[in-house]
Image 1 (cartoon, protein in one colour):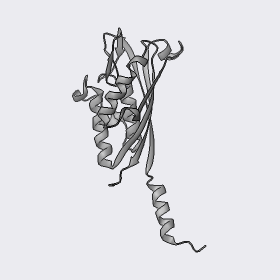
Image 2 (image 1 turned 120 degrees about the vertical axis):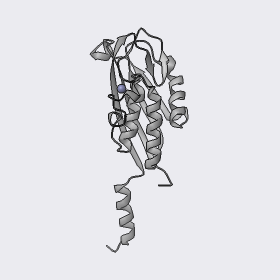
Image 3 (image 1 turned 30 degrees about the vertical axis):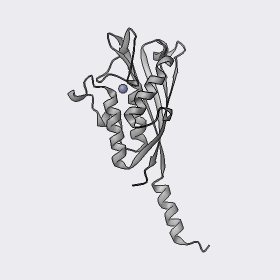
Image 4 (image 1 turned 90 degrees about the vertical axis):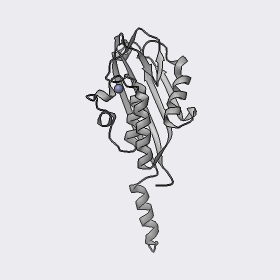
Length: 179
Ligand SMILES: [Zn+2]
């Protein structure tokens, strides 16, 4: 009954501006002959690759959206419009680096990322350790903070028919001490 009001106010402020925030992202690109297949910044030898304005790195794009979403900073289309010549054939690692800066400026640190790639062929698993290293280095994280899993489409839907590559990602961020 007689709770000190200061504590209630502090609790209410924490609920309004929580220390931890989650974000999700997903992306899908059509696959076509004559394009390089790049996932997580790593080139994977294959006869087809994603159609897109940038390098079409679905994993990097899904992670960008998860991070932007966690900080409620909009989405990848808002920050990197595909109408801009600046991003034509750009490495999507540039997008990730920019997103990390936006989070820094907003006062957030990235705790971990989990993701799943959907691709029928070729096998992604052998390339995952390199993707983890590359994405972690780009985001200023350690490789074990970036989890990447892979699965096929079981022969159904656009992924299963080999027509598309898909990626889903989730990110956890924390308000950094200085903010
Ligand atoms: Zn994309």
